[in-house]
Image 1 (cartoon, rainbow, N blue to C red):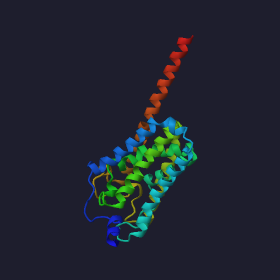
Image 2 (spheres, rainbow, N blue to C red; image 1 turned 90 degrees about the vertical axis):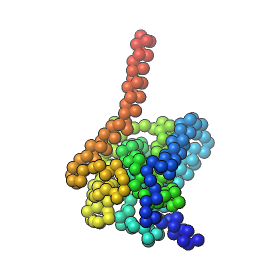
Image 3 (cartoon, rainbow, N blue to C red; image 1 turned 120 degrees about the horizontal axis):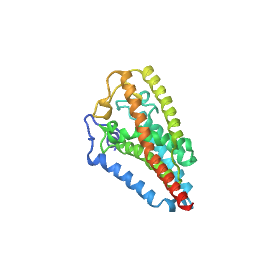
Image 4 (tube, rainbow, N blue to C red; image 1 turned 90 degrees about the horizontal axis):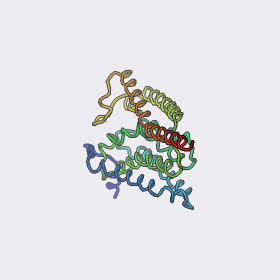
Length: 260
C-alpha cells in the first residue's frame, strides 16, 4: 500500500507524458465540453436557487487543487524540486487562486486579471505541458495539473456566460500591471534562490519540448520577445470583444437611421 502511494504521488525517472497524445488532448476536450454545457444552460444556472452555493463549492475546489500541489511538494521528499523552488510565483498558480476568489466575489478586477493571464500565460502550459513530462496518467500530478490548468478557464467562462462579466480596454492595463509586478517578484526570487529557481521560466527553459525553447538565449532579448508575445496575446484575447462591440455599435446606428 505504501509503495503504491509513493508511486502515485511521485514521478518517474523517464518521460511518461507525451505531447498531443490522448492523455494530452482528452483533458482539453473535457474542459471544452463543460464550458459548452455552461453556455447552453447559462440562463437556468443563473436562476438556480443554489447558484451561490455552486460558486462557493467551485471556489473551494479551485483553491484545494492549487494547495494540493504544494502539499505534494512538501510531503514527497523524493521529488526533484523542493518547496523553495516551487513557491507560489507563477501565472498558472495565481490564476487558480484568483479564480477561487473571483467565483465567490464576482470582482471585476479579479476577472480582468484572470482573463488576460489565462490567454497569455496558462495557454502555453496547456499547449506544451512540460511540467508533467515525468508524471503520466497513473500519477497524482497528472490529474492535479489538468484540474489546475483547465478549471481556470471553466471558472472564467462561468462568470462570463452566467454572470455576464466581460473585459474592457482598461482590463488589459490592470492585468498588465499585475503581470509586471509578478514578473518583478519572479526575477527577485530567481536571483536570490539561484540554481533550481525558474519562476515564470525567466531564468532558463525546461529540459523537455516547449514553446519557450524557441526564445533567444540572451536574457534581455528573451525578456523583450516575451513581453512582445504577451502584449500581442493580450490584444488577440480582447479581439472577440472588440469585434462584438463594433458590430453592436453598427447595428445601433442602423437601427437609429431606420427609426428616423
